[in-house]
Structures are given as C-alpha cells and as structure tokens.
Figure 1 (spheres, rainbow, N blue to C red):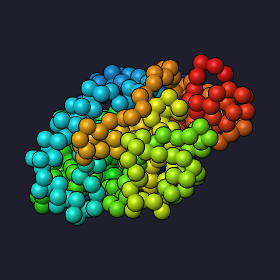
Figure 2 (cartoon, rainbow, N blue to C red):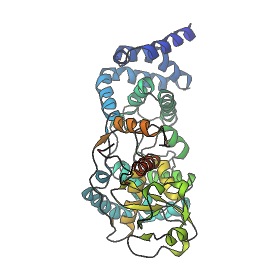
Figure 3 (cartoon, helix red, strand yellow):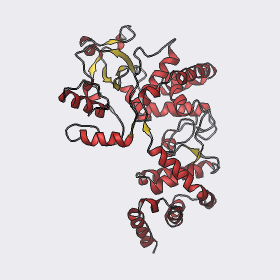
Figure 4 (tube, helix red, strand yellow):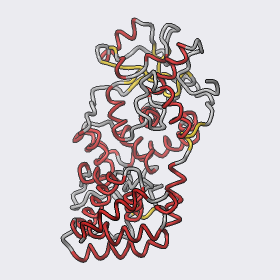
Length: 397
C-alpha cells in the first residue's frame, strides 16, 4: 500500500501545475507520506526522528515565505564581474584578514604543515564564504533542504543532502532549531553541504566534533582538507595577471589550450606587474583566463585555480579567492587592468544565448553561467561575423 501511495504521489507531483506544486498543502502531504518515512529509514534514534519531524511540522507556517526567497534567488541576475571585485569590500576583507593572520598564526602554521595549503588561500575562502564567520547563514537548515528536496529541479540531489543532514544531527546531537544554512543548504563558516561536511570536516581541536560553526581551527582545517583532497599543489602558484600581444585572441582561453609558461613567454605574454615569471614555474602548464572577456584583467592560471573551482564552480569565485589571497600575502597588491562596466544580464538571457550558440559552438552546457566555453563560443561567433572579439555578451547580435 505504501508503494502504491508513493507512486501516486510522484505522478501527482510531476503532473501538477506549477502554481499547485507550490502549495503548502501538497508540501505537507509530501512530508507526511514520503519524507518522514525517509527520515525513519535513515535514523536509529526515535528521539531524533521525532525532533526532526516535529520541527518540520512547526515550520510549515513559514513555507510560503521561504519558498518565495528561494524562487527570487533562482531568477537573480548573473553577477557582473566588476561588481565581484568592489574595492571597499576587498579592502575590508584584507584588513580583517591580516589581523586574523596574526591572531591565528600558530594554528595556521600547524594547519599549513598538516594539509600543505597556503594560509592566505584558507583565509580568502573563509572571508568569501562568511566574512570570517561573522556573516553566517540564517535560514532553517532542515526546512530549506526539505523544500529543495520537494520542489527543486535537483530534487534527488537535495534529498540526499537532506538525509546527510539528518545523519549529522543524529551523530552529533545537534539542536535542530540552531542548525542554519544558506539557500542551497550549505553549513557553517566554510559553507559545506552536508555530504561535504561528512567527507571533509576536520576536528582539529580534538573535541570530538568537526565544529565548522563555532571553531576557527576546525573551520580552517576543514577548508584545507577539502583543497588538499582535491589536488592542491603547495609548490605551485594559482595564477598571474598578464598583458597579451594583439596576436593572442580571447577565444584561446581555457584549460584545453594550456601551454607551459615558457611557451606563453615566447608568444609575447608578460606579467602585468612587469616582474619576471617565477623560474620554478617555467616548465609548468598554464592557460589563459578572460573572466569578463576583454573588458577586464586577463590571467594565466594553473591547475590550482581549478582546485579552487572545485570549492565553488565559478571563474569569478576562484579568481576572487586567488586575488584576495595575494592581497593578504603581498603589500599593496591590486589589479593592473581596470574592470570595465558590462551590461546587466539575467540567467534566462544567458540560457537563450547559449541555446543559439550551441547550434554551431561548444558552450559547455546550457546552464545560465558565462563560463570559459560560453565566452569562447561568443568569441568564435564574433570572429566569424567580423565583429570585434570581446568574448562577452553585448547588446548587439
């Protein structure tokens, strides 16, 4: 009978109108007939099961307002690159980060020794995620992940994350009311998804819990462990801002166009700082990165850059981490090329653009994000159309 009810529920949810599928009544029915059963299957402590189910029932009154928050974020504009690097925010992070680097010097030294990840990179990620733990997530974790499991187009993915969260609550006896997440269900100061926490969370202060909510040591060690396990190489730089000759075009960016630093040097690329490239990197592989096409700084990046993208799959995010880490490491570090203003564009418009370009070019997927393959496809289109190559969406065709 349960099997039949479940099948009926799935058919009902998949065929329901968009407005009806958003109904709190349908959500409540789904909780009672599906999710609560999943919770029981994934817990051994009846007290934990009851606490979670009661908590979700209490949160039903907030369903509509929480759903609106999630829907508004899903329709947000694509972040303009220049807005990602506001000087005032970067300077605030740098000042605060340098103070913490002194305060936590011994801890950072020990974490660096254990996980072989530069302390400045760790501080930069910490700053970007929750401003060093001072601006953490404030949404109810269980409710957010349950709603995403119910109505997101990635329902299966978020259901797994919800059940991992249930495991965390049961294992560490965490108060369900105090467990806050972001709009994507990310936890604590490093903003780990529940599955990421279970795989990479580190109890560095030996108090029997990887406390990424209140422990600075555990937060930094967990970030370091994540990067280490994803291939961070402490012998390599992450990247350099460069100047390119007119013979190098933006459609040459991407890891599939990698060359050694010596080869790029022969092609006429130089560091924007006018300093020589490090000798130790001359035979190592780098590729071009045009994060805002030709409307901003250009970089040569190493494999470490793509390790940063494992943390957050965004060129701008990875670049912001690397750049902030350099500001924490070097005195008066800044961009040598200004970020020019680019037009506002929302994800729906990017998806339409990607669909048109994908007929003839590889855009890397229809995802509403302007990654290097989409930028490159724009560049190829511009080249074939005798339009100036910028590798960035414009108001023109």
